[in-house]
Amino acid sequence: METPCAEVRCMRSNRAPHRLPMARLALMVTISVVVPSYNDAGYLAACLDALSAQTRAADEVIVVDNGSTDATAEVARAGGARLVTEPLRGIWPATAAGFDAASGDLLARLDADSVPAPGWLAEVEHRMSCPDQPTFVTGSGLFYGANGVVRWIARNIYIGGYFTMIGALLAHPPVFGSNYAMRRDAWLELRDLVHRDRGDVHDDLDLSWWIQPGMTVVRDERLLVGVSARPFDSPEALWRRVRIAFHTLAIEFRAWGPLERRAAHWRARRTRQRWVGSEQLDVTVDVDGDDPLPA
Image 1 (cartoon, one colour):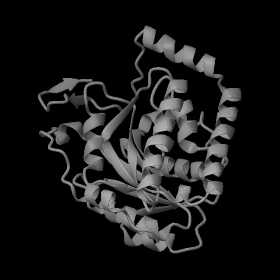
Image 2: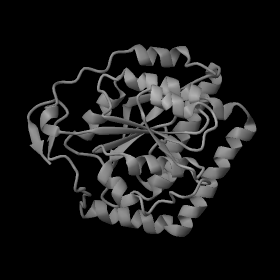
Image 3: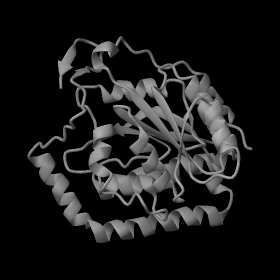
């Protein structure tokens, strides 16, 4: 199995950015981390190892075994994760099963080949507790397992293009499937809108499309994870992902047209409509760590 490159190892070794106290006892926030996996036992072990080294520990780690024939289940149990099985094959069915099973106030999402930096969950908690109280927070990735040119293309053109082009289409940042978190009550609202039973769509693009008016997405540059460059192992593997992206957009266009969607979000912004879920935090802390502010 490929191993994280020096850039990712450096990212993992760095200390989390300094944060002033956040009155966590008052916030009473819990975080569940969901990791879908299909025959990725080797990658999964590295992911769980990185989660165990978080400066802010997860309250719950859920690994969704999507019909693996390798040691995925054994690795999950050995890593202290709660194992959920989802026989319907596909990244979206597996991810949705994990979200359904999660109990945290915040639901964080990684891929099996994600390697989160030590301060990843601390940053999730901090950013979701700021006065603007975003519904979603998402970050980017540092690729490992390929040469420097491939990694640069992957980060700046592949991921950069995703955020730029899809963000322009959505009129807000999309979530990046290897690295995001959302409020649990947002999932309870979206779970019956998304195409969760389809294995032929990009789950993050589908979820991003169905984000409702008043919900907000923040892209946080501090939220970093290592991501395997294996999609770039062959032109066929890369083309498959691009083809599924266009297929996903075709499905979304038919279900909720882009002009209709943008109009709904524009009306929400014009009227300053703000989505507030039933489980949203009762208090929040400002960016500088001063006194808690009312939600």
